[in-house]
Image (cartoon, rainbow, N blue to C red; front, side, top):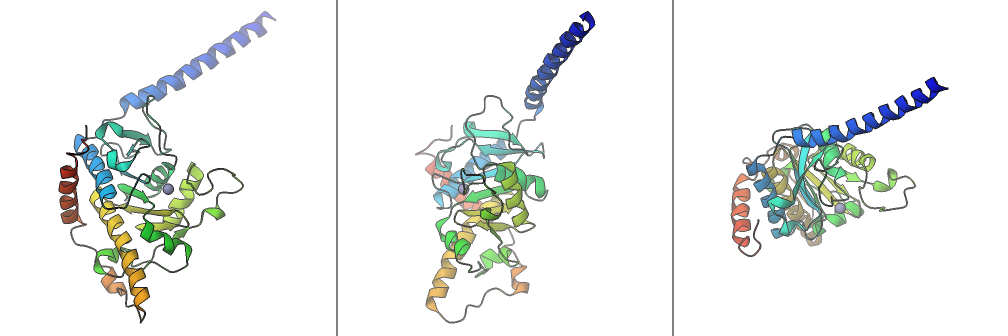
Length: 275
Ligand SMILES: [Zn+2]
């Protein structure tokens, strides 16, 4: 009896020790997580403001960047309007999309988009999730989004459409949102090795090897959608980039546009300070 009672005490003790270890590991993980460089955080703030200024993000949508000192981490604003984002709003996440700071503020419901794409795509260093209006019709009509001009040569191999109905099962809540890891993985699978995917009745995800590339692709893909709709309205035959032309991406990965947009975002910071 005594030995059984001791066993229970021992068991309880070991359970308490185990939970303490989990709690300590979690805080140690947060403490050991290297700080992202100030330059990367500043670029992410710029990306938020640029995408808002360019009409790609409004009060909704988000942009993230892979941590520059820890590949299994990424940086993303707390749930907040991109145009108002400051360095103080940037939080670190692991690839399961758990915030690493126990005191983190409210996270975006759809942060799993970012974590699962970084996990599936080692080549990706920046992810944009937008609800850009010009893209929405191409996600619901079956009309394929195609490279109409040289600024969007990167979609020469097509833009897949994510159909959330196929993967959400019987989950009755947040029907259109990528609100858990399984949905994030399904979206990453639809994206495959492509630079962009549309999300039916919702928006799009655009990725890049850097923030300038992901931001540039996001801006010009939305412009391409507007131009393609205009071209279709004109009638006649639409002559898109051919496969060889579509292999020639913008040579500077939109760096020149990024520099300009960043300058414009900084000018606008006079109205909405970053810190
Ligand atoms: Zn969304």
